[in-house]
Length: 290
Ligand code: HEC
Ligand code: HEC
Ligand code: HEC
Image (tube, rainbow, N blue to C red; front, side, top):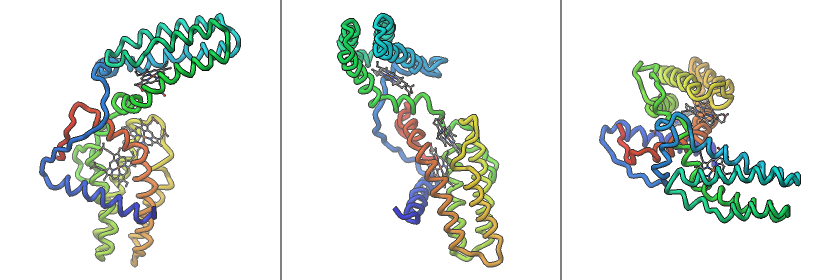
C-alpha cells in the first residue's frame, strides 16, 4: 500500500470515530467474538490475587519438558518421576475449569507414561507429540483470549489528563483529540491558515507528549519505538517548518505522514488487537459512544 493511501485511510477511519464521538447519540454496537468459560475468572485477578491458571500452566509445563529431556538423556528413572509430577498437575488442572474437563483427555497421558516405561525413545517422542497436541489445540483457541482478558492492562483505566483542556480523559478520548489536532495541522495549511496550523501543532505536540509519558504506566522501562527520538525529531521538525515565514506545505505533510506511519499505525498494530479484544471479552458486550 502506498504511504499516502495508508495515512489517508487512517485519517478517514479516525474521522468516522470523531463523527460518532461528536454526534452525542447513543449507539449500541453488537459484537461477536469468541468467549472464555466464565469459571476461568476465579483463577485471575480481581477474584484471585495471583494469576492461578497461568502459574498452574507453567507448573505443568515444567515436569512435562523435564520428562522428555531426561528420556533423551536415557535417564528413564528420572523421566518417570517427572512424568508422575506432570500427570498429577495435568489431572489437577483438568478439574479446575468444569467447561474444559473434556479438553484434558487421559489416554494420551497414559500412553506417554507407558512409552517412558518401554524406554523406546522414538515411541516416547511420538507420544510426547500427541500430548503436545492436546496442549496446542486448547492454546490455539484460548490462549490469546486469556492474555487479552486477564493479562493485558486496560488502556481506559489509566488516569490521564488532557494537557489542553486539563480535563481527566480516557485513553480513547485522548487518542481522538490527538488525532483531531494531527489532522487539523495539514487541513489548516491547505486552507492557508498558518496561525491555526501552529496552534493545532502545539496541541498535537502536547498530547503526543502526554501519550509518551503514559507508556510508563504499563512499561517499567523506556521503549524505543513509536515515541522514541526518531519520532520526536520529526515532530520538532514540523514545529520548525511551521515557524518559517513561508511554509513548505508538502514538507510538513510528508513529515506528518511519517509520524502517522511510524508512530500511530505501528503502535496500533502492537496494542490495538489486545485493547479491542479485551473490550470484546468484557462482560459488557454492548458499548456506548459518549
Ligand atoms: C501505545 C501506542 C499508541 C500510539 C503511539 C498511538 N496510539 Fe492511537 N490508540 C492506541 C490504542 C491502544 C488504541 C485503542 C484504545 C481503545 O479504544 O481501547 C488507540 C486508538 C486510537 C484511535 C481510535 C479511538 C476510538 O475512537 O476508538 C485513534 C483515532 C487514534 N488511536 C489515533 C492515534 C494517532 C493519530 C496517533 C499518532 C499521532 C496515535 N493514535 C498514536 C495506541 C496508540
Ligand atoms: C483447556 C485448555 C488448555 C489446555 C488443555 C492446556 N492449556 Fe496451557 N494455557 C491455556 C490458557 C488459556 C493459557 C493462557 C494463560 C494466560 O496467559 O494467562 C495457557 C498458557 C500456557 C502456558 C504459558 C505460555 C505463555 O507463553 O504465556 C504454558 C507454558 C502452558 N499453557 C502449558 C501447557 C501444557 C504443557 C499443556 C499440555 C500438557 C497445556 N498448557 C494444556 C489453556 C490450556
Ligand atoms: C495499557 C498498557 C500499555 C500501554 C499504555 C502501553 N503499552 Fe506497550 N505493551 C503493553 C503490553 C502488555 C505489551 C506486550 C508485553 C510487554 O512488552 O509487556 C506491550 C508491548 C509493547 C512493545 C513491544 C514489545 C516490547 O516490550 O518492546 C512496544 C515497543 C511497546 N509496547 C511500546 C509502547 C509505547 C511506546 C507506549 C506508549 C506510547 C506503550 N507501549 C503503551 C501494554 C501497554
